Image (cartoon, rainbow, N blue to C red; front, side, top):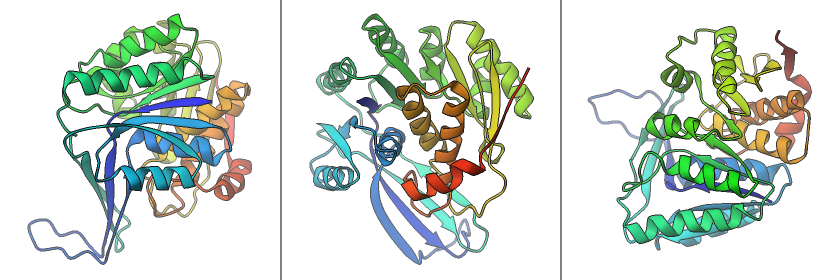
Amino acid sequence: MITVGGFNSSLDKALDLEILEPGTVNRARDARPYPGGKGLHVAATVAALGEPVCLVGLIDAANRRLFEDRLGARGVEFHGVESADPIRTCLAIQERGTGRVTEILEPGPQLDADTRGELQARFLSMAAESTLATLSGSLPGGFADDTYAALVSALRDAGVRCLVDASGGLLRAAVGARPFLIKPNRDEIEAVTGATVADPEAALAASRTLAAGGIGVVIVSLGAAGAVMSDGVQAWHAWVPALDVRNPVGSGDCLLGGVAVGLARGLDLEDVVRLGVACGTANALSDETGWVRPEDIDAVLPRVRCHGVA
């Protein structure tokens, strides 16, 4: 079992427009609501790869049935901790004319101490019985920046590997707690290390710096350039030659889901990054954010290019 912490659940709405024109009235051609959040995308990817997974996240009464039905149908065991206030709504506006995607993300509700405590306790309880655990994304209001760091430390004491995908103060504090793996993107690793990451070589240098500080593995997602991974000793760059990309939003989350499965299966790290990049790329082949189809992963995986870097 892999346990995923995705505490800031969202109701995502995908809007299709011909062209987004700021400052004017824009009429969507189509609008599709579906469960969202970075942790949810990770969990769905794990399930698509056939591994048992549970997701611990926030939910409200109005959306509980939607989340449980949709996630259950896709093989994810959902443990929803109910909020008195509505979960956030996030918009992804895709322009058919340009292919450009604009995201508008709400911050999430302000949670009381009891709800915050239940989310953390439920996550730790499930993660303690799991092969590994992941923590993804932002947090609702009321949580401190050291929340992920405290959870990482508790799981390390329990002998459970923890993977973290976060930004800002959450990521900086988590780095200090030395999780088994972190997955920053280009902007996030620049913010943590202070280094400019203009290309895969610079990303590898920054990842090695963090790995040398006590983090087991650092994988940096680089969008169309793929991802780089280092364990402080070995390093790899993996990417997929150009494909017909439809919607790349959520690809970093799907990458982390593939990485989690690779680690849980005991794959060599080179094969772990290959699987992660295949999952991230597979997500970009369909319109739905953060969902991968097993057949797309199977089709992409043989196309992943990966080389070791000295």
